[in-house]
Length: 273
Image (cartoon, rainbow, N blue to C red; front, side):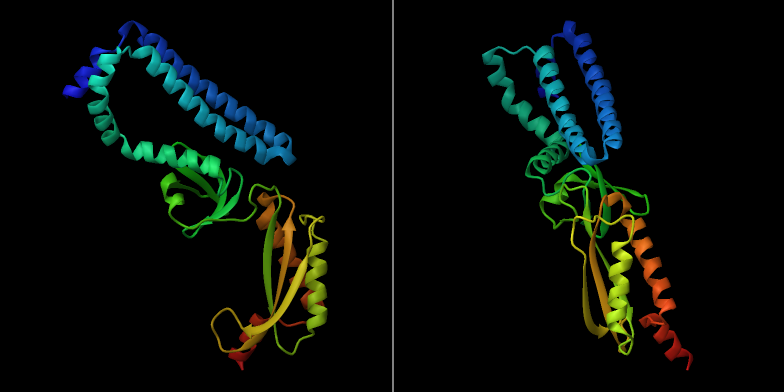
C-alpha cells in the first residue's frame, strides 16, 4: 500500500486523458493494422505468412511503444524521487505481474529466436495445428479439427516443439499405405507415386519419394505387411488434410482396380476365416 501511495504521488493527473487516448488509439490502430495485414495476406497467397509475421511483430511494437508513451506522460519523477521509489516499486510490480511479464518476455523471445513463426504448422505436447497468433501471453494454435488451443508462451522455452514448414508456405506431408507381403509391390509403388504426383494439391517443384519396407502392421498384430510411405510437399500447408484425402482416395481406388489387397483387408479376411 505504501508503494502504491508513493507512485500515485508522482502521477500527473492532468495528463490522464492523454494517456487514455494513447491506449485507445494503440488498441484500435493495432487491431485495424493487424486485420488489414491479414486481409492482404489472404489476397496475396504467396506472401501470406510474411504478412502474418509482420502483424505479430507489429503487435509487440505497438504495445511497448504505447507503454513507454503512457508511462513517460503520466508519471513525472525527479532523480531523487526515482531512486527512492524505484526499488520498492520494482519489487511490488514484479511480484504482481510476474506471470504477465514472463509470458511477455517469452513471446518476444519466440518472435526473435523464431523456433516457429505465425503460419507454421507445429506439434507441441500432443497438439498439432497452425500457429495463428503469438500473443502477449499465449500462442494460439488452430488444430486440424478447427479447435483453438491457447498455450502459455513460456512453455515453448522449456519443451520440445516441431515445425512442419519452418516459415515456408509449402510443407512436407507423409502418407503411409500397407499392403500384403504377397501383393505386387512394384505396381503398388507406382500407384502411390502417380496418385501423389497427379494431385492438384502437390507442390510440383519439390521431390516425391516412395519408400518400401516390411514390418508388422500398425495395429500391433504379429502379421507382417509391406509399408509404402510416400513423402511429398503440399503447395500450401492449409491444404494438408485435403491433400491427404485426395491421395488416399486415388490410391484406394487404384488398389481396388488392380486387385491389390491392403493389410487391413487381409486382417479382416483372416479374422473371418
